[in-house]
Length: 398
Image (cartoon, rainbow, N blue to C red; front, side):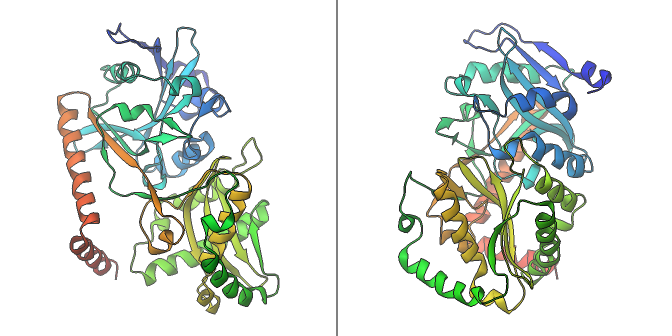
């Protein structure tokens, strides 16, 4: 960290509050590198965070996407009277119309957003604690008009998300979820009849030379799988008349960097699971894992005749069995309600948004963002409107 970066970090002493709070001061970093040491200190067993808020993942995102889209880091660290960190908010600031809006780093590429909290603080956080942080963000030199905290789970690892103490609304999309009970029998996760159908299909693939299920561990395996993904996925999206979001500036570089980024526990910031044979990569699912939950980020499957044997569903069965054996408590398949997700996930993770104005201009901006999110959700929940929207989108991408 440079001396300039260190100087840029600023400590805002919060004013006395009528409500009880453990937060004595709020430190704001405008530089990812300046916040790295504190951030990584949160990534241990004494803290609660989703895999999406790891430093390696979001630093990769900001380096390759955030900088190109004008996102400036705003890392907020709340500390107690002993200067021990209690909470970290990994935010980014961006201009939207005439207002400056802060939201979680990662934008649409991140499924879940949540503050990183010390476990004991998370269990007892109050609205007074959150108001203390909001007061610090209202300071004139912070220069933020509104907060857009989107796609947040109401709890994580059975502990409440403290930002749910703010005004909330249901997010545009839900997230299909498969809870896993400890020592759950395989048939409670995937029925015997479904397993039989998948095993019958997999027998066709097992005849291929070198066929196997592979979780990528080496740089060579990661490169092979990603090289295949960035060839297959654009063609798949074109067949569906969908825009190729992976062609957006910096996206491929972000994905490659995060998939290669090694974590302290030996895993990767993004894990890749696959079905492969000597001839080709047959299917790919990639996501994040933290020892408790696997969350899918992106997937694709072959364009060859092997696609007729449902390789994506077969791969999903391998993933479910793998993480159940590792005593994970949940698997989620990312935002959206694609039909294949409902074959595995019978429930949804409750997801919420909060749009908060910090001043008069920000209140108008927050109201507009809230209304737009409500409208998007209405379209998603109304089949006729959704069909019309898909038709328009398809015609625009021909």
